[in-house]
Amino acid sequence: NNVSIDRGTNPENTFKLPFELIAPKQVWLTYAQDDVIIIDRDKTSITISGNTLKVELTQDETLKLDHRKQVQVQIRALTADNVAIRSNIKEYSVSKILKDGVIQ
Image 1 (cartoon, rainbow, N blue to C red):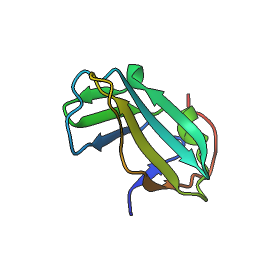
Image 2 (cartoon, rainbow, N blue to C red):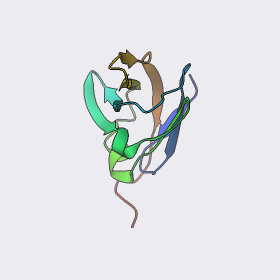
Image 3 (cartoon, rainbow, N blue to C red):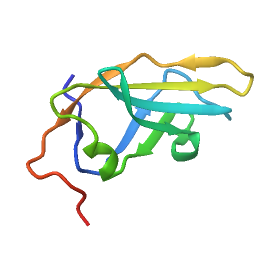
Image 4 (cartoon, one colour):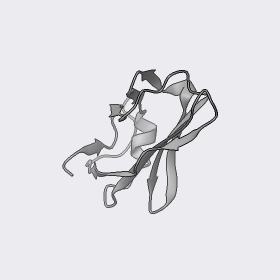
């Protein structure tokens, strides 16, 4: 997998699902490394349009990721009719930066 999350940036991550999410009761978008949750978002900070989810990460959030480890990402949702669903876990590399810290 040659998709990478860039540390120290505020990227917009886009995820395509094999189905549409219509008026879900809840959505979780979770980023973890070594089975430890690093970034956890719910539907209040996720843009949902049909089968596409978008989330903008902050510099602070991407700086929490370790460039020496893969990051795992999973989407879970509760549909309008109370069915709990989940995506497969996807793995991405994390890019290295030379100077840590939030740019202001």
